[in-house]
Length: 111
Length: 112
Image 1 (tube, chains in turn purple, blue):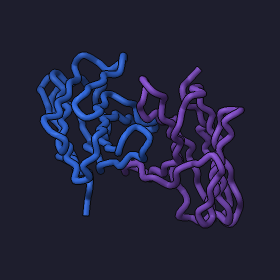
Image 2: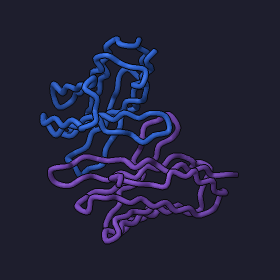
Image 3: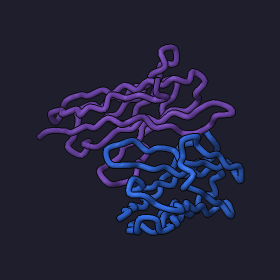
């Protein structure tokens, strides 16, 4: 089983729709979780950290489910500018601390 | 202002000719990472440092080496690049293991 798994997509979604991504991780001791956004031929940039209580930033909501070992990202009222690859990132635990990336989910917003 | 700077942005090298990529940071972060990202794939961790402690991923080719002479700088050396090493190389830093990672703009390496 991969350490961090995502549905690679692609997701083609009409503008204004709501889209959700899930990401599963294998290490139950992982402590930190992030969603990054990567535009074509650019470096990944932090979209949001994911906290146990869930967090929201404008149109974006991230949630963590430790029992089932997955995190999710919800994008409401999607914009053309949301088109990108969304990467789930998880750190390890003590003795195996490192940031591991999922394969990424490619999102295209259609006008 | 850029906080993680990679040089060069683009590098073309010949098969077998050694190449060095550099990364510098102004964040004073103690953790630094080198990732390799090939087209349409996720970034793959090559090495990481916690301060001076060096960690080499098990599947990182022996051809790849790294140096971190001080907190601010980190280098990736590819001793004998092969065609399969064509990729984007990303440097990232974080404050401790749990912190978010800040990425440089990457070096796009092409081996011909």
